[in-house]
Length: 556
Image (cartoon, rainbow, N blue to C red; front, side, top):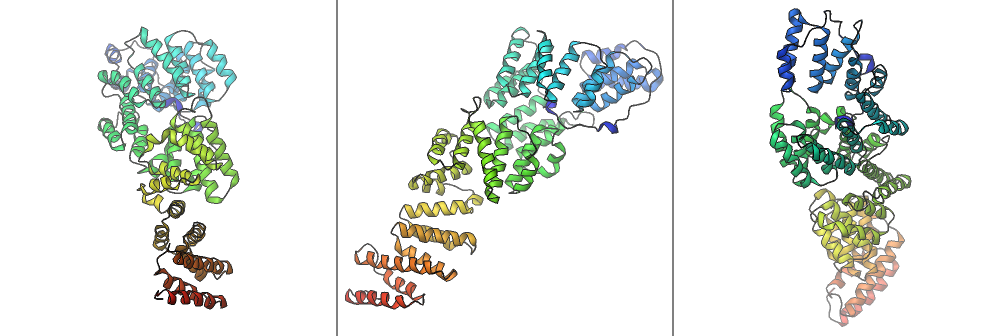
C-alpha cells in the first residue's frame, strides 16, 4: 500500500527546510526513552517539543522528533526535521539515510536517490536502493541489489515486499512463513501474510491469519482495513463499512494514519458514492484509486473519461490488463473501432492465457471475453460454463451467457437466462431486447417478441428491432407477426422490399389458415394489412382470399 505510492506528496521546488537549531548535543531525556520503549511516539514528541520550547532544544532533539514523526506516519514532518539537521555545520552521518527514507515514503524517489548518495554504506542503504531500483523499473540494478541482500530478517522482509509489489504473492508468503517459524513474536508478519492471501483471492484464509494479529492489536488501522476488505469480498459493502466504523471513530487531528486509504475504500464499499470528490486527488497515491475511478466512469457510461484516465497506464498486474481490456472493448463498441476491439481482445488473451491466471475466475472470464470478441461462441461457453456456479444471480454475467447461448442456437436456455435478469438498465439495452426477441421467435413465441417492440419508444433501435422481428418471423414461418412487422416497416419507410416481405408473409398466413395451422380470424387482419398498401397486386390477392373466405364461411 504505502510502498506502492507513485505520486510525490510534495513538489521538490516547494520544500522548505526549517532554520538551524542551535545548541550542543544532549543526552536523551529518560522520560522520552520510556515513551519510546512503549512505542508511544505521540508522548515522546510531546516531551521533545516541550524541551525545544523551553530552550533545551538540540540537534539530537531534532533527530528524535524526526524519528517519532516518521514512526507515526507523518513523513512530511519527519522530512522537515531531518532537513533542518542537514543544514548544521556537521550533521550526523545517519541523517542522510533517514531523510532518504522520508523522501521515499513521500513518493519523492528522485530526491531519495540523490540524498542516498550522501549516506554511509549500510544494509538499510542497500534495501532502500533495492526498492528505488524497483520504483524506477531498473531490472539490472534491482538484480544487483538483490544479490547484496543477506540472510537477515530485515533484508528478507525487504525482499518479500518486492515480491509482493511484483505480484509474486506466493514467494512473499514463503518468506514470511519461514521468518514466523523462528520468530512467533513477530505478530505483524501475520498481517503481511493475510494481505498476500487477500491478493490471491483467498479471503477466508486471509481472515483466519489476520485474526491472530487482531487478537493482540484490535485497534490496528492496517489490520482493520484489511478485515473490512475481506468482508467486502466475502459479503457486501455494508458489512465492510461496519468494520471501518471503529477506524473512523479513532481518527483525530493528531492520529490520521491511513485516512486516505480509509476514504478510498469507503467510496468502493458504497458503490462509488463520492467518487468524484475523493478519488481524483488519490490517483497515484493509492494505486487502486485510478482503477476505481475508471470503473466509476464506466458505470456512469462515460467511456471517454475512463479511456483518457487509463490510456497512458502501462499495465503490470492482471487487474490493470483486465481493466484496459474492458475500456478498449467499450470504446471499440461505442465508436465501431476495430482497432480498439483488437487491443481489448489481446489484453484479455494475455491475462487468460498466463500461467498464473488461466485457472482463476478472472482468467477464465478474460478468455471468454477474448473469444466473445472473436465471435467464437462455442469457446465462450466452454469458459463461462466452468464458472457459472459463482455467478448464478449476476445479471452482467447472465447477459453475456445468454448471448453466447443464443449465438450457438440454444434459444430455449437463452430465453430462460434473459428472463431471469432483473437489472432494469441492462433490460433496456438494445442487445438484450434484440437477443430476447430472437429467442422468443426461435422458440415459437413471436407474439412476445412483438410485444417487446410495442413497448419501445420510436427510435432507430425500435426500427432495427422491427426489422429483426420481420425477417426472423418470416424465416421461422411465423407469418402473421412477420406481416405485422413488414406492414409497420413499410409505413415508416416505403421501401419496395418491405412490400415484397409483407406480401409473402400475408400469403404465408393465408396458406397456414387453409392448412388449419393458423386461426381463421387472422384472415381479416391480413386483408386489412394488405389494404394498407396502394399496390395493384393488393386487390388480386384480396380477391382470392375473399373467395376462399366466402366458400368456407369465414367472416372478413
